[in-house]
Image (cartoon, rainbow, N blue to C red; front, side):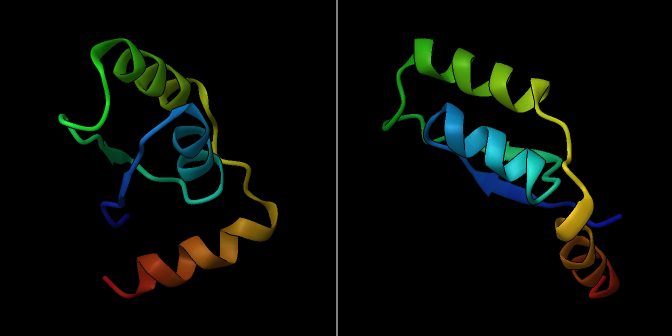
Length: 66
């Protein structure tokens, strides 16, 4: 399994990178996101599950590159 990190700047991006991209790490800009929003972003990311389905082939391609 490859380490996949994605940038998140709000709750929606956090959900999407996890559910569509199966990201196992996120990056949040300290100067761009306030502390309350960070808590919401991390919670959304932790609560989201990989959707699988049509996203699985993309993940397999990324894993094969490593």
